Length: 187
Image (cartoon, rainbow, N blue to C red):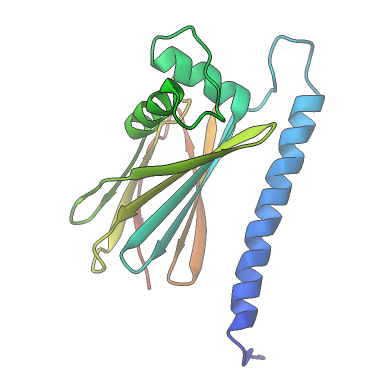
């Protein structure tokens, strides 16, 4: 077995994997929006993708959702019928987004609740990225993930969570029938 002598190769491979995930998700999103049956539904698949990167005691979370679904669900969750502008950083919409994410996505470690702080969002034509950060104890051995994003609104909702920790990466699937998982953090 050949062992690379340059650690940059591992960084390149990880970046390549992330890029491939983004490309695949983008192609899927475009396909789903183009192949819609009339105006009944924006797309036949309800999906979110969440990346959780743990480095030392830092936890960084990036959640990607379909823009149209997210707007409708966040408005309904916050009992408002007034659409908000995702690009406006000072709008009431940011408060609505924070309230929804804080209620529907939670992380707990084996020693404490992880307070996830909303840091920013990015918006494109099809999707919204929500970024969160938190602190984990470096001696934690497990992580409890609760992902209920859209599960109360779409019966076919699937939430994919990819956890990166200590050079390892593993994916998990969440749905309306399975919104919580405990994972072991293996170094």
